[in-house]
Image (cartoon, rainbow over all chains, first blue to last red; front, top):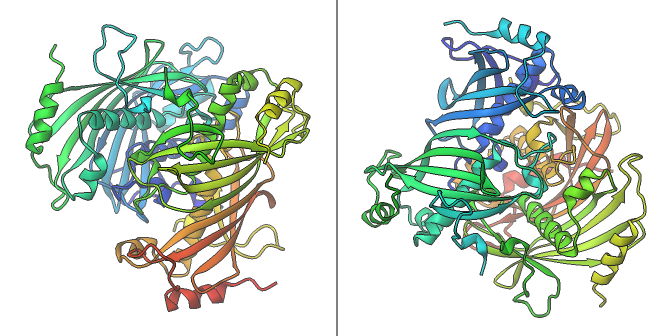
Length: 151
Length: 151
Length: 151
Length: 151
């Protein structure tokens, strides 16, 4: 099995959530010698995708079913350190503020347990026909509720 | 000459700032049929790069001189609409909140004058040796001051 | 108007073809300080897209019409030099070996008239339903014929 | 441990070589609903990077040591099928035609054991000072020799 789909325990015991390991390759870096700033959002999306897969949801099925799309609405990101070539990072994904047609994710990207990037990302459930927000399918809402981090 | 380096007047007369045209290609889109969310940050960086070039600053010289780096510190982005293949967008870049070692950019990405993406992006001037914030070089600070949008 | 869609004369007078200017940004480079090798194929696709637009074909219309897709079949690329941050390149696109359901492009990426990358790229016309090769639409075939470089 | 760094046996028993699993995310796809053609080269580079790591070579150390760079010289690629969102692919990397200052890789990208992409990629050992080809370091040459596929 591919560890890319395996949730593991975060090295940071204060940080629950779904953890996806990400290795940094040349494709991720820029001439400054560090990871290009937009690429952290690629890693976050990998984390959300594997988290959804873990919950039993296939984005491919959602896409092909013509069902509602999960659309990015807001990104609030803090760049705390610079990741570099060959770094082994961990994307830690947690859920909070679940609403009828939207939800906020907190995604922390760690290197050796220390955050290099932290983002709050709002996803909205959008009807593919109207392009307007629409309530989460009941099964999705229920699964998201189970995942809420209560603090 | 290449329009990529030519500031033009925004179609939105209420919006001053430096305008860079960006065309959407297959590389920018994803299987959802729209521009992949991280790629708007690529377009913003093109806008900032051409704006800096317009001010007479070469990022390549800054990089090779070992001088201070302009490092992304924060991104606060709102996704307002979905850009698609072949769209002609405009990245409108303005400057505000200039401080001794940091500055905020507002970058609006427009299609036919209507915003599809708006971001507030904080850049910090960082000493390449220490990795710590360091005051803007005087010449940079002066040029940035000239560009401040006063509202 | 956006020079990205303007064919211009190549600085290399021995080189006919459609020329698209491309500027190198941080997004295009890697930690080696040069353009990441896969990205030259992004620039080639921009060149083919603008060349098609120049011929009057919209890839978006082709995509949305459910009409045949132009699918990459082969890439034979030579890396001759390294492009770097801020470089102004030109993608020179020419057509040869037009067949009933396929065609070869030669795409040369130049810096100051000297090639840094040259590729032969085979495109096949594919029926979206069957996924099999299908003859070029007559209008496309005719336009491609007009563009053939006879040597 | 992260399977991204774990060689596993290919499902295709006729295919020796180093195998890296790759999952397809939205970032890898385009509006055509398939993996964007340049991205297969990103996957190939991940495969070569993990293969080098498996041999005990760190590209980061090579980069920071100012030692010779491994530079892409040629890519000859055949696109055989279209990978899609959520696909689990395997990048199978083998070595052949080892010369004093260059080497050819064969990289096959498989889905359920069937090839979707195959490339022959020539890498040259280049002196960072002169930018000219230079002999492989003895340790590298020896390890490459051990990996040669003799057919």
